[in-house]
Length: 128
Image (cartoon, rainbow, N blue to C red; front, side):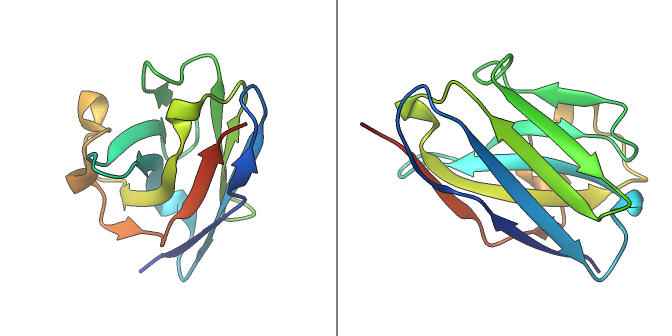
């Protein structure tokens, strides 16, 4: 069983940048695909970005393409989300998730039900 702990959230001005980190323990991330999700108050949890087992395949929600970058370091057992050109609508609690590598994700990667392991979340607020 893998445990996930996010960090790096905070308050940032529009146009600014943040780098979220997700530290994994208990099992190697080389056994999992990973994803970042976010959930704003009153809204459903939405998939932001996805990385395959070896970080060869990455995918992004349309709302963040060109601004966010996911990276997965199986050696360090870490996942990162570099967020640039932040907008107020990016404000949310951001969650790191890990899923079984034996499943086929494809276009289903944004579905929260595809992942069995979650962190506790980190708050990102974009405001002037």
